[in-house]
Structures are given as structure tokens and as C-alpha cells.
Length: 422
Image (cartoon, rainbow, N blue to C red; front, side, top):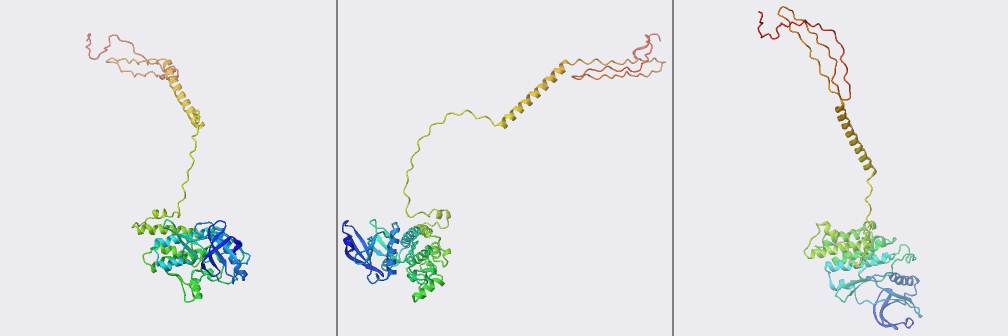
């Protein structure tokens, strides 16, 4: 079968479009999962195109949470197939049915992986359009952890691919369809954001947010009704969880998370907060602590940066010249100091060279005799001014002649002496 390259071992499951087999590569001896389109479906060209598109969509995405498709084709008998990695585990739908209500930490951890798988698909231009628990496979790791794998890209939308549905035709699962998808409108990455919100509600509460008695009623409910917060179904989830789920379930695409990457980051933050709350640490009232919790799911590997070689020491440079403005002010100050010193020296020298001032003449006042009327004394006018440094004394101007009395040698000079002739 299949050109003799694969040997069929056993059937793993059956879906709406085909069946999945465990096979082994004849030359390599490695086991894979092989999906074959059902014979009754192979006569429908639209279903054949959808089957091939599923293989192409999954093969475009290389991410640990997306199933890896490695081969596809058509054998000599006309059977269409594609080969993917074999996954051991249960679907998320089986986990919910068999394990019951999941712990909050486990539910958020699985939801985070689904969001990252969808973010990787959107990065390659692929819109899944059918996000639901049965299209997520949970495999058990060697260390006891769980890994979610997104599968079944049967109705996905690829960039540049033709439209595979007629106008107004609705294809998908009604319980997980966005309002625009339920109305038959154009879908995009925000359609998967809404479906991830439905999946989050189911993982955290064990039930669906909106469901009607019929498929049509369910589609109408997603277009017209507002879901209740998941905290009402499961008390104790907290306001952070309610805001996360209700934002993803917004009716208008513009009110949802702007991208699946943004929703994955928010799920990571809420998951860390829930883990701290379970440990008895409450950081809800500390915005700084909450902001530091928006970390990636896996830490980036440490990068060793090369140590740069030491640079050779630069030769000592001559001191830089002072600014021109500082030099000008320095010269101006020195000039002022020199000018002031020269002025002081000139004053001192002029004082030393100036001639001494001439003594002023003292007027002589004659003492009148006892029988004589005293004559008025007219002082001689002195017009001399003391010589100042640098100036010559001007000669005194002559005044009017002063009459001097004749000298009497016997006139008393001292009124207190007695007259010897009297």
C-alpha cells in the first residue's frame, strides 16, 4: 500500500473525513500516524481539496504544540493520504470526560499551550476555524508533564487559497463558533480567539458558556447572548480569570484580544497568579509584582557574550586651550589692574613733586592808646589757594593800602602792666 513505503499496523481512530492508522516506514523502520481520506469522500472534489489543504496547513507550522506533517500524496489506487508524527495520548475531550473538573493550574497550563499553537499557526497565515477539545491531543511526557498538540486543520483557512465553502455556508462545530463564523461572514485570526475563549470556559468550569437545544439555537445564542462569568459556575476562580475569559468571548472582534499571542501572554500571567494564590501569596494589590509575572512560557536560553579585548590606552593629550571668552575676560581684568596701579603711582609721584605751600601772612593789629579811637583794621585780602598736586599756586592779588599808626614806644603793650610815668 502507498507505493510500498509504509506498512499498515492497526487503526487508531475514525473521523468524519477519514481514518487514522499506525504505520511503519519500510526503509527507516520508524512509526508514524497515517490519515487516509475515506473512499466515499474521495468522489467529492471539494472534500479532496479540503483534505489536501489540511495537510498543507499543518506542514507549514513548526511548533512543539502543533502536529508535525511530513508527507502527503495519492497512491496508485487513488487514495489520498498524509503522514504525520504519531502521538500517544488522549484527546482533550477524553480528558474532560474521564478526569472531570480539572484543577485551575492544570486547565490554564493546557490552555496556554493551545494558545501558543494557534499563535504559531496565525504567524504562518493559517486560521484553524475548528478549535475544540476533540482537536487537541494530550500526550504524557517522560517527566510526568503534559503536552498539548493541536491537530485536524480540515477546515482551516490558508493565505492565497481559494474559498472552499459557498457563500452563507456554515462549517464547524456550533458550540465553539464565533458570532461572525456562525453568521457565515469572513473569518480571521480573531475567530480562533473566540473559540479559544469557549475552550477556556469549558476547561475551567466543565461546561459550555452558550448552548441551545438545537444547533441553530446554539448559533443564535453565540450571536445574541452574553455569557456569564466563569466564576459564577465555579466560585473562587477570581476576577483575573473572569476578565480573561469574557474578553476572549466578546461579540465584536475589536473587543477581544488583538492577537492570539496577546491572549497567550495573558493566560501565562493569570496562571502564575493562580499558582501564587494557591501557595498563599497574594499579589493582586501590587501592580508592580503583577507586571513582572508576564513572562514567556519557557525561558530564553542564556547567551554568552564575548568579552571585548582591552583597548590600548590613549596617549595623554595636552590640556585643552581655555575657551576664547574666558581668555578675553582674563586679559580685560589684567588691563584694569595695571591701569589702576599706574594711576596710584602717578598720584604718589605728583604729591612728592608738588612745592610746599607759602605761609599765610598774619595781619598786625595796632593797640589804640587810651585817648585814641581805635581804627578799623582792614584785613589784607589773600587770594592764595593751597597748591594741590599738579597745580601751581596763584599769586595773591594786591588789596587796598592799610594805614598803619605810628609806633609809640611808650604805649602800653600789656594792659595789665602799670605805667611807670603815671
